[in-house]
Image (tube, one colour):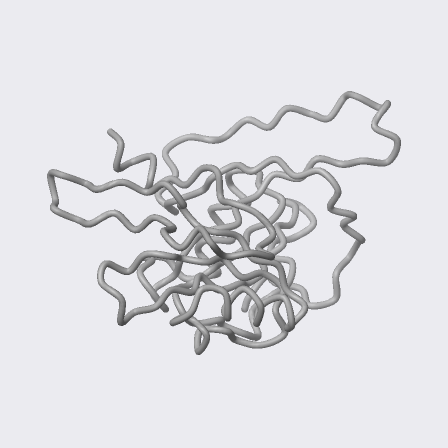
Length: 196
């Protein structure tokens, strides 16, 4: 991919993360980032990024390079593309240049059972060393597979609601008996949009 580096120019000790959301590449205004002025953090850094976005490989509209360009425009430090039930490989790295700066592009996977209606129990898998969509039918098996593959997993849009004006069903997390997941996605653009 043009503009992306596979040899990372610097280390990113990701200890504190601010989650900013970039949903569309049709950015109509710049996002002003506040400089980090507190020097008492003793080596901690704040990185702004988006951990949940899609490309046309599932249900998104922009490809990885376009999303990375929009993220650069908005001043994000990293993005993680999590297409539905597919993990696109070979595109990870830093995108940008010395003049505009760089954004780190990573991939994960948003896994859900496509045979279940409605398609509830979406799970964001990060850092797994292989694709895990084949485990989607059983949520606990999926979580355990992500952990066994060295990854971390988050329950995606766990309180998602219906969009009454388009008759789209909600897709929340419903199997709350599961264990050993890393965390919960606490805000999601589409879930927030449904509440308008």
